[in-house]
Length: 161
Image (cartoon, rainbow, N blue to C red; front, side, top):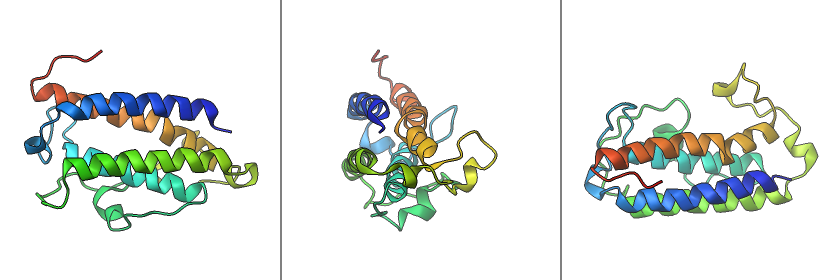
């Protein structure tokens, strides 16, 4: 189960690495033009949502303190915090999705057939845990990756692709 979604997510992580290589540490807390999110919020959001996906697949959330800062519905005006470094956040995202992919491979049909319970997705076609994990591995990650790419371009870098 989730083999296609895992392949897509692995490809997105390759792009993630290329995009993040150019985002300067000094712009981490600067909201980007257009979407208004700072790279620190985008990275923290991807990390905590990846961990939330792990919980759905039988794992746990490692950075519970990030739920308020970066979880669904959080405000994206993150004040400077020296503990939130680019390196640490990139590692958190990479590890969160590696673990989510591993758990997605071994979760059972009974687990993923149940309702997901994610309030922000209420009323959408995404109704089961399986739908939600698919969304997290693919479209959700890609959406925020595009915003990180915008942050990279705002820092003056040319298009990668």
